[in-house]
Figure (tube, rainbow, N blue to C red):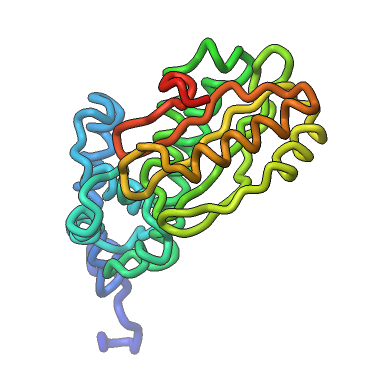
Amino acid sequence: MPKGGKAKGFADMGLLALPLKMPEVALGHLGHRARMRQRLLTAGPEALADYELLEMVLFLALPRQDTKPIARALMARFGSFANAIAAPAAELCQVEGVKEAGAAALKTVQAAALRLARADLLDRPLLDSWERLLDYLAASLARARVEEVHVLFLDARNQLIADEVQGRGTVNHSPVYPREVVRRALELQATALVLVHNHPSGDPTPSRADLQMTAQIKAAAAVFDIHLHDHLIIGNGRQVSLRREGLL
């Protein structure tokens, strides 16, 4: 201790008042993150690889961690950015370093993407936006691990009132009840329906059960002058329209 019993402060020593041990992120990753943000803003998302986009999502949830190894582990586990954000939260948390905060960040990105795709379908006749509809359904259902039956409820102008899950089941079956579909259509004052469900196997070929369910819902809805426009089956990269195939 210097004469006089007072320790010199950082300023007296001509040093900046830095903590004795800087966090690791401050030493090596802040510059990397800044460069990636700049590349995204100036060159657009296409300038980033899938693992880099995953890194950037994880930046927000894990500010003090190096997210590159985590992003690469996600790619190794799920194969792509799209598959990673669509994966169940429980599976995401099995990847080392992700934890609850990282899983929530990834699922938030998926939710935002679906909201954006769905926004393109609103306030316009759904039958005039068929390609947009297929893109939205593929994004929401093609990577689901179990079967889900959705019903799109439409008004008299064929605009979307609601997209609701009417059944969720196993890898090859999902229960759906015609009376519940019709009851909900009447509640929403819907005049038309589009049925949608996925095949987790990736093959959208309709089964006998699919055809039976379609016929039952079509008959039940017709009693109340509710028209069934189509039944779409979503696979991995392919979709089948029962109406287009002459099966409706």
